[in-house]
Length: 217
Image 1 (tube, helix red, strand yellow):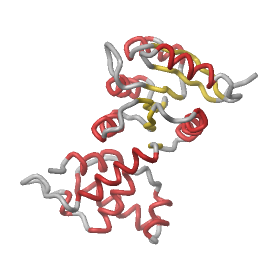
Image 2 (image 1 turned 90 degrees about the vertical axis):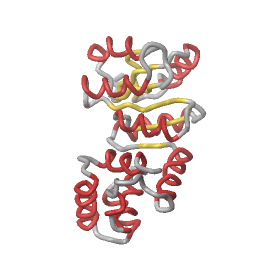
Image 3 (image 1 turned 90 degrees about the horizontal axis):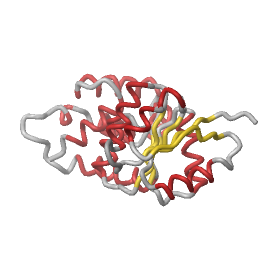
Image 4 (image 1 turned 45 degrees about the horizontal axis):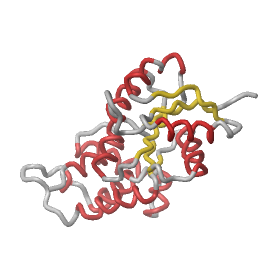
């Protein structure tokens, strides 16, 4: 039998890790190529196992999942990380995204939701669990009601439409999805994003979204 998606598990809870492995091995197009209980051990086996997807816990001994994620992206940039954790506060979400994670799920997800997330991230889509995404959206909604730190006027230099685009970027919206949501052309979306990058002095979509959130008072 041939497999398409190579998955590595990194979680210090042995019973949870083994349970996930048994469930994923029932999927016809997923192969679990390795598992470890901490970031250091995972990195040692990274090139040897060459996973497409890593399911990564955050709180682990030795090296936490956020640091491990950033190191994975330097060693094997093509490998995609999905955070699978109990932490749902925005600080952990933002730090994980900044480190390079493409997915963020809580451990109460069903196996069907997890498998769907693996497929989505494998195809290059960013995925944040809906109730986590709702928190991110709430933070962006509140940005306009807060006073930015004194001396930092970058965010306030954005137009209202650019702020709308920025909020949708934070939720992983593609240019096409943002265009449909705001009833504008994809070319206009690209122009807005280019200007946002220029104003905020950032190089990509994730940095733009995280920048705005970090500057809140």
